[in-house]
Length: 147
Image 1 (cartoon, rainbow, N blue to C red):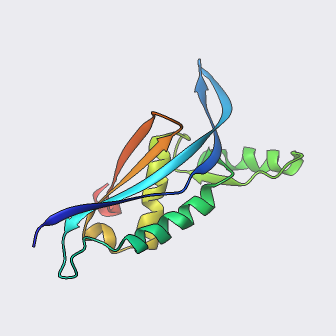
Image 2: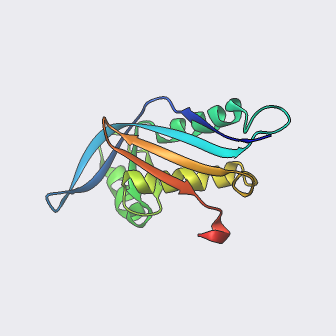
Image 3: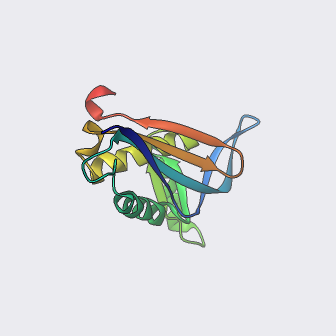
């Protein structure tokens, strides 16, 4: 029938992270948006993929990330220690590397493979992470056996 691409954008996600600024890790926050684009064959139903499936996935991702601290998995002990003494709640989401837009995209790819395990064998999926205004990372989600 043909090929196509569908994309869905998340609601705003407010989260903090720390990345080097002038060589010093600094805690700061952004309003992120995560989009998921799926490329594939248009099926007999006239769709590459139902928008609703992507919407529900991005709703779960947004809920998990909103008002969280994004941190590398290797910093779990430090963050949990800080959380025990902080005068506020720290809800951390641990990423598979430094807390950058690119690594956040990889984390979303991990969640996609966990949530919809057969998807990446059927279509090509791209996660787009907008960090604030004018900064964007685009990550192709690859099945684990090809990474």
